Every structure is written in structure tokens, then in C-alpha cells.
Amino acid sequence: MSNEPNLNFGSPTIFFDSHPEEQESYLYSYWSSLKSNLKIAFTGEVPKFHSPGKLRIIWWTHDGNQGLKDYELHEYEQVRANFDILLNMPEIRRVVIQGYSGQNPYVLVNGTNPWQEKFRRMEREARRAKALQKKAEGKGGQDAIFDDFIGAPKIEKGKSGTLVDIEDVIEQNDRAEEERRRVDGDKIWRENEGLLSGEMV
Image: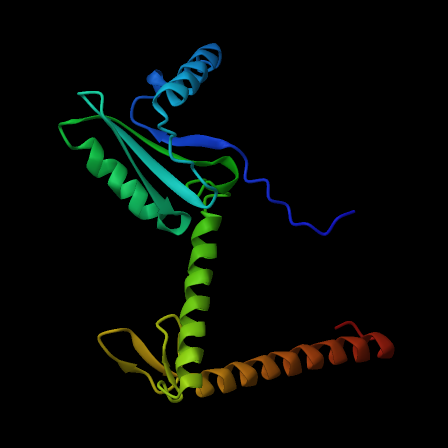
């Protein structure tokens, strides 16, 4: 068994299409593939590769011209907004959002979007890493900018976010975790003592 990670992102697929009736049928896709390969052979114009981890928005005008733009996966909300903006333009005939089937940020699981939490977590980690880097360089002192801590001490509102003393937040989290462990330990101790004495707890 190899230790290589699973890199199966699925296949390129369409997430949104303003005119789904224009999608190629299974048999016609072979003909279309042959035509595109012949066009590449004669013109030398190779279409831009769609890499995993990106979303692609493609649009066609009434004149038959095509345009496309790639976005990072975490910009999925911007891609959806641009889809609507392009649809409202009078010169645009069709708009499509493409991505890989294993990386669909628009899917809902039990009514929630698991990608939103993943992107928020990545954003928080990036902010923390930036704050720690500033602290290591001596630029940030003990203060760092975080706006996702609730009930943190020494909070000052500024234009760029909430200013929080990291050392106080770490100390407060350690105290809360220690208190939780103590309460759980007392609860287990009481249950065990009740079981040994024959009393119902």
C-alpha cells in the first residue's frame, strides 16, 4: 500500500449553466471532441487547461465570441455574483460555471455548505500565521488583529478589525479547558462513587 495522497478531484463538470439545453449530448460530444482536436491541429491554438482547485466562468456573446476567466476555489461567491452580472448584460448570450466534480463549493450537505467552514478555517489560519510572523519580526508586539474571537479581553475596535491580545486569549482558553476537565473529572468521580456505594446517581 502506498502513502500517496488521494488526488482524485473528479472530472471537469458544469455547476451552473444559463442555457442547459445547449449542452452536448453523449454522442455529439464525440463529434465535438473530434472537431476541436482538428481545430487545434490546424490552427495551433490550444485551449487553456482547467486545473483543479479553480473555478472557470465561460461566457458567449450573440456574435459567437467566447470569453473565460479562472478563479480560485475560495472565491466561489464572487464567481456566482459574476455569473449573475454577466447574465444581466444584453450582449451576453450564455454563461457557464465549470469546476471539478469533487470540488463543488455550491453543494449543500444536510442544509449546510461544508466548503464555507473550510474556507473560513483557512482564512483564520492565514490571519493567525500573519500575526505570528509580525510578532516574530517584532512589528506586532503582543497584539494581533482577529475579529472572530468572542469575549476576548482587551478589545479595541479599529478600522481594520478587532485588536486582541493573543497572550490573554491563549491564557483564557487554557483556563476554560482546565475548568472543563475539572468538571468532567468531578462528574466521573461522583458517578463512580455512587456505583461503588450502591446508590443511584
